[in-house]
Length: 203
Image 1: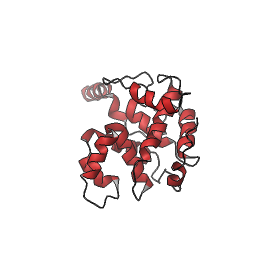
Image 2: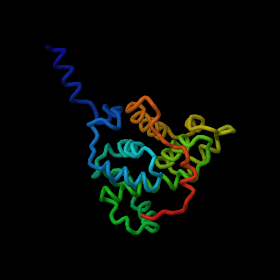
Image 3: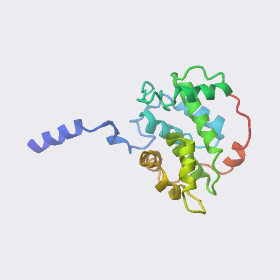
Image 4: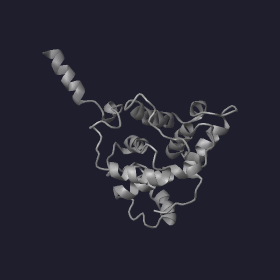
């Protein structure tokens, strides 16, 4: 009885991140915003791209809580800074309100694509990981990490040791959420480089 009580108290004391490895498709994670993740993934990464990558990113950012605000001032599901949103909004004036989940998600995925285009690696999947790392740590900081990596640089795993510890954990969590959802590769990245080379950013 005493051991059962101790186990119960331990489970109640677990922090919010204790269940972070639950698959992205688990019912633990709200499906309220899935339509937005689908729509803006299709718009900015193409119709065959797995939108769960960006839902997993939002879980890593906010645990899908639209009301979260960080100590640095980042807002919403995708934890976007107001000044970053303002820059995105200049090119997408219809992105009405940073605090509205629809536009927060749209801006986050749009920003992911903007960063993705800046990286060149043999693997589109590794470009995605570098985009996520840049989203977390900043593009300039990740470019410095990339430049400190012995050449030839062909994968995220090579760059990761030069990245901040928090950023390594961030990318690892996103990958874990996806890997635990399906042991088979979930991304459909074939042809994505050609698609993202287009300049049609219309919303």
